[in-house]
Length: 325
Ligand SMILES: Nc1ncnc2c1ncn2[C@@H]1O[C@H](COP(=O)(O)OP(=O)(O)OP(=O)(O)O)[C@@H](O)[C@H]1O
Ligand SMILES: [Mg+2]
Image 1 (cartoon, helix red, strand yellow):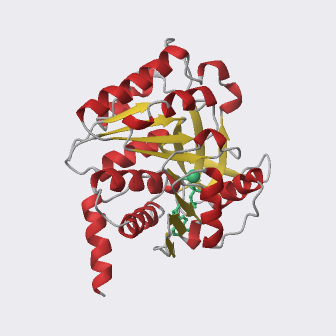
Image 2 (tube, rainbow, N blue to C red; image 1 turned 60 degrees about the vertical axis):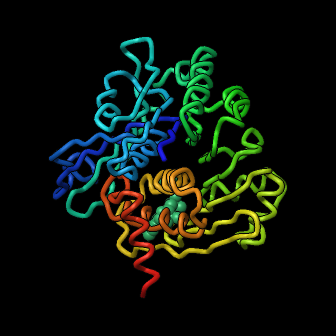
């Protein structure tokens, strides 16, 4: 079964400078970092799309990405066969960069530098033409097969209430719509299929909805009813995840004790859920969320923003092997 994925949201560039830090500066009590290697990876919505490609194995499922990414980074999406239909008009647009300076020996970050303040906010949100193109692309894709939409909202400006209204106006054309958002007011996501907050985001959303932020699974049920959302994966870092949809629920401990870098693990969860929902429609939610938990655990073992090192099929094999013991 083919289908397509459309990822819409804030694209970041996660840049890492791997440095050797073995002496203190004579100028101030700070380490001197000697640069060994620079790395750049897609973050945010870009990382969700990259995870979908990693899960896809050799399937070549169309993945379309909408977000603000200057053209000099287009080679990143080209390499992963991710379509990026809209590029900024100007040649000198800046990307949203998170630079992490990391000690190669310990793996610890020494400092993170964000350039967000320098970006021209007006260019980060989609204009009406872009919104029309997004809606059209959902309609076009739906004529060829199922369409799963991921909204990756890091609160940087791409996801707006107006854009969401337009996306939700093609509700019948989307097989699934899955939202990962940092926003506390989630009223604009009413009616979506799944939401994947971490526990801090969830607590803030509960407060905004007038609910007590209690992590008992019973409360997730109430959260879903009030928010008018079908299902939730509440990610809890090293404590794993709690999931709820209808009368089904699952509480999963984290799968991995050797986590060294949790950057982007949430994107892996959202992408794995989206992938499983669309590609394995008859599968029980339990298997899907276990696969997402395993994938996120593995990503935490890799330095920097990473994508699932296993395809969806390999993940499912791992999950079924676990059942045998
Ligand atoms: N320390 C850890 N050990 C093992 N697994 C982890 C650890 N931290 C995160 N995970 C896995 O990754 C999932 C998502 O992590 P987390 O709750 O940190 O997401 P997040 O805060 O949304 O991350 P992101 O920065 O990508 O938005 C967890 O549910 C768990 O499966
Ligand atoms: Mg997250």
